[in-house]
Image (cartoon, rainbow, N blue to C red; front, side):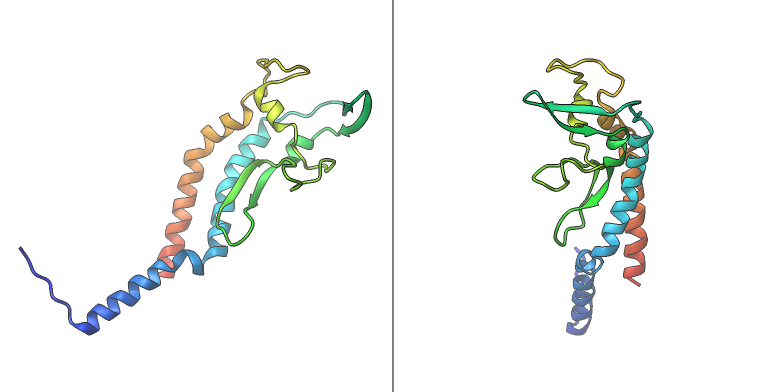
Length: 164
């Protein structure tokens, strides 16, 4: 068995270097979010490319009265990426919908019907095989490896420059 000995000065230097390395995520939170957001662009582009636009507005009725009108292109505009609240490095991507009031239900960028589209529901509770069924899931499967590779490459670049 090989014994390795450190003197106190070398051990302190090593400890400082390890502690500096451990703070990478905290000190570079903005850069990490930026890397994550850039990585999600592949998904956003793939999902948007498969979304068609209605030729006319869709009228939403509630209790026999016109509630609001969904303008063409609303689902397309809702697909994007956004950061989590707080100091998290997490970035979400997909159709942004009004859940808990994060986006106004009447906003031009609210994809509140994205889940309906994803499930293939057209005018009834029954699921149909529409051309948009599973659109977002398929886009995620196609771009997952690309996004992961871009994210890791970005992290490596940033970590290498941080550790110099």
